[in-house]
Amino acid sequence: MMTTPLSAGIPVGDGSSIVARARRSADDDKQLRDQDFQAPMSRALGLGTAGLVELTEIERHERLTRMREGTLGSVHSWELVTAVDGPGTRLTVFLNGCGLRCLYCHNPDTFLMKDGAPVSSDEILGRIRRYRRIFRATGGGITISGGEAMMQPEFVRRIFHGAKEMGVHTCLDTSGFLGVNCDDDILDHLDLCLLDVKSGLPDTYKRVTSGELQPTIDFGDRLAARGTTRVWIRFVLVPGLTDDWDNIHAIGEIISKWKNVIDRVEVLPFHQMGRDKWHSLGLKYELEETKPPTPEATAKIREYFESLGFEVH
Ligand code: SF4
Image (cartoon, rainbow, N blue to C red; front, side, top):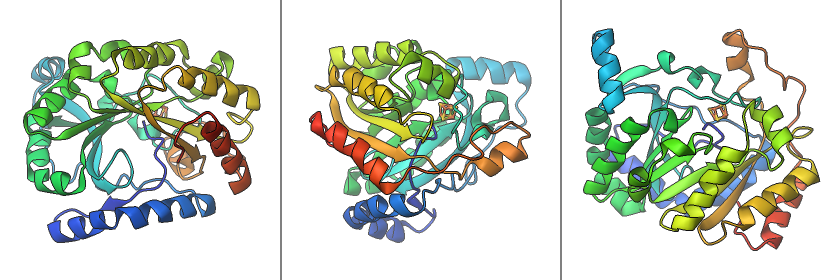
């Protein structure tokens, strides 16, 4: 979903430093809150697919068959992070393909599924197995993000099934736009959903994403009705685009219906770290002149969600 705040990305290969870093997560949390007022930054999406075996030789027909059955995915990158993308230290895997076109997307190189690397579900599961001890020690797990992960529901299904068999916490980062693809079986294997509510008014949502708001509302309604998956709401505050109080109040109304499953609301200040990618891909970037919100403006929106009874970050 690429609406993440700051990266706490961890270089791979040195298990001890990962654990040490994880132990510092409370400090990291505080630092993240302080820093996001100073210099909103994107995560580095550190490693690309480095370290993962890519099945680039596979011929087209087999590739499509395997993608349909979910044994093969189109993967943008992965990283180990602490204090973002869910609790504890997490293996976050970013998938390619997204049906939305958020004006503030800081990774437009995930838009198209064909641009991702072909990586097997077994490869991802092998990596989850490798980090199991760290997940257990930190209360972490696997997070699947995008792009929009629900463009590849069968791939996600296999990974979540395998992760739960290993006793690993699962998290899905999604806009909910393709919530219909996230069937009850996937939800049965999903502990936490990071649900990006990009706007509360249909017109604003359309302007921000080029898509419709209703599918996200329907998905949130389903999560609340089931009550089995915890939810963190994410909202990107963009001056002149999403910061209108009518829009904020509309979000407040929508998410208040889901209180039984929401553990936190994250207000993420817009940043300009994605600008260069839009340029390098030759895409028109419409937020060229948009500034990050001020710390005061961000604090006000956070206070509003707090006043509704949410824990806000
Ligand atoms: S365009 Fe897709 S990947 Fe980018 S922020 Fe929007 S939902 Fe996320």
